Image 1 (cartoon, rainbow, N blue to C red):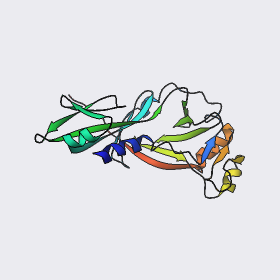
Image 2: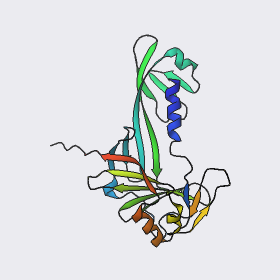
Image 3: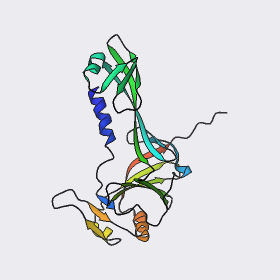
Length: 224
């Protein structure tokens, strides 16, 4: 049970690593920010990487995954910030409790659904639509933005890509100026500030984009 809650905490930070390539502005420059995802992107998807359900709503993307567990009343009593009351387990910091069933007078079983918001349109997360792609810009500090690329294929499935360093930096430098931000001996990090034309070339070549997740569209059922 302790391992289960530890995993939930780990999932919250799974998308928070500092990217190796950052931007000085939300991308692409000169393209108006959106208030909502394009309608044809919205829907429910299956993530092939971790078998979670991905939902693209009007203003956010989030993952949901359910975990089944078995624990004892004694284990619950020993855990901090977790308590059992009227057939439900509550954990501090979680909006919703989750229900459990008694297997016997001391053992409980239940299913917990974890929701992880990947992106929500707002002041610090700017959404743009360009060349058929959704551009997910997230401010990581006062000077820099990270960028994810959400692309849709002809089957209606989505691919999520993150920025990465190319194998040959000279190819990137041939398109746009590159600034080294990392002190000697630390993890590499570079800054770029492409023009709209330079960004279009980066998008066309996929030089700095690496697919990290694939979401298969779940067709809605139509009941007659």
